[in-house]
Length: 119
Image (cartoon, rainbow, N blue to C red; front, side):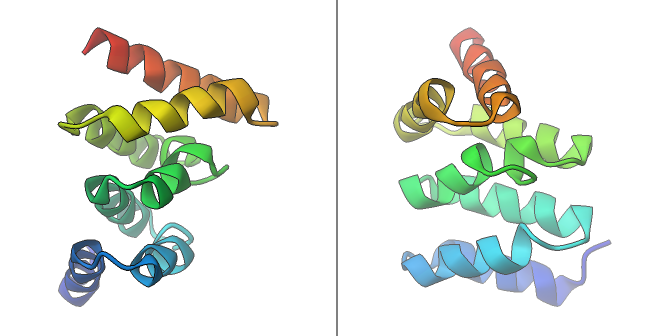
């Protein structure tokens, strides 16, 4: 169970519109050794629904859809599927599929893109 204070900090960072909030979520949240913190952070980054936050959970190895924890990866994918305006996430997924240097990251992006097409 995540500490209530940690949840409140992640929620507060999600509510801020500045680049520093995204940087802190990435550096501290997505790099946490705790699966639940990474999962909650990924959700917060997706709910921001801006380019800089979405690319963290899509293009980075070991984060978001590429997390080594299946629970974190699936939670991230489900959160992406729940976004109302998918314009930016689709753009980032397409760019990742076409240009990323890592085959595993490209394949994960391809899988999420396929799920979006079905939803």
